[in-house]
Image 1 (cartoon, helix red, strand yellow):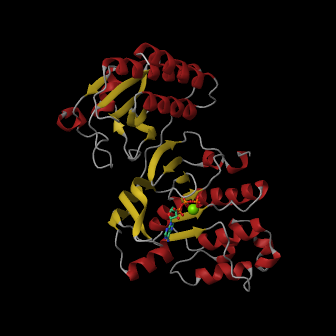
Image 2 (cartoon, helix red, strand yellow; image 1 turned 120 degrees about the vertical axis):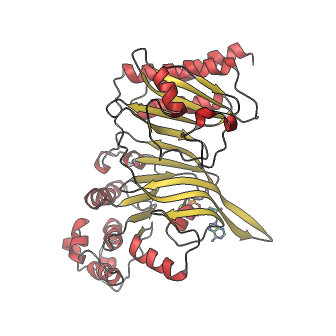
Image 3 (cartoon, protein in one colour; image 1 turned 90 degrees about the vertical axis):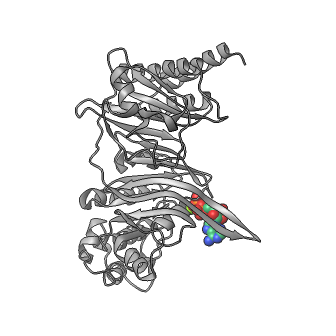
Length: 406
Ligand SMILES: Nc1ncnc2c1ncn2[C@@H]1O[C@H](COP(=O)(O)OP(=O)(O)OP(=O)(O)O)[C@@H](O)[C@H]1O
Ligand SMILES: [Mg+2]
């Protein structure tokens, strides 16, 4: 295909994409996906400027690295430079380029070689920038590709302006769990099966993260490693700044008991104990539990506290299993497809229970689901593909569980 055709086709694709978008996230993520694909690059990110704080934050990221924990002052680093001046920057050798100092390309699992950074310019203001990293074939980005990226970024910025989408970024984030270069292999026949192939991800305190990805891509394996239910093969897991890559048995038991609440697809309640007894059984294992009555009340199950699992619906059982996770006052709740076995209205009940608890107690939640609609509740949506992070998207306006429809 001649370059002219490529240019026109890409522009059309982005215009089509932007024509019907209903929210800013969709406009940005759709545009970035097209830019990264058309420029045959390895990764890309969109950074937006919060004009109130004059700071830039990444809101959507494609590629195997995690840049979502970084926010920078406008004017600082490559992204700040491009946003402030409105002028693009092309870097042909990142390793030797001073403009990288203090920006996203260190310690995040992605080695930047060639980079284009273009402004998101909506004719009135620069509202952020787009960064594209590494041609897949190892070559440098040429002038034509730079113009294409600039043009596509402007289209996205103008759409955002015309539709009146606003940017409000909350950057008071502390990291709870940090995954760097995590790999996981399982023995398979006479070889090994590589399931996680270098996961780089930060999970923050008080956030609601949804993890999406095809069956077998490694979601549960990743959650199990974070929850201390399985061990990593290589890489580093840090919990609240402390290395937790190779915990001792005692550390592990304490961590699983005090720190983590699990919610699974199957409720795993003990059939010969009532709802409240199931909760009490767990409460007795930990040092400083919440009251069992309060845990049961927080999921609206007070009326059913003395029922046995066999006398409850699936949704009610799942709510008890949420109460059982909550009674420990865990810092992190790991929920692996908690609504997969439930119908729509029961799923909404369960998600509402989780949402309310998170809000009240400031618990962090990582939830795996196959349901893309549930992702709209999340603060961030993380897509996993074939053992790697494929994209990270920040939802600027997460929905309430009650607003979800499928
Ligand atoms: N204990 C194990 N031993 C061997 N292979 C395993 C083990 N656990 C998981 N796997 C393999 O690792 C891969 C990823 O599994 P995982 O359960 O993490 O996928 P997933 O993304 O959660 O999928 P699903 O959406 O179907 O739950 C699969 O190919 C699976 O067969
Ligand atoms: Mg799974």
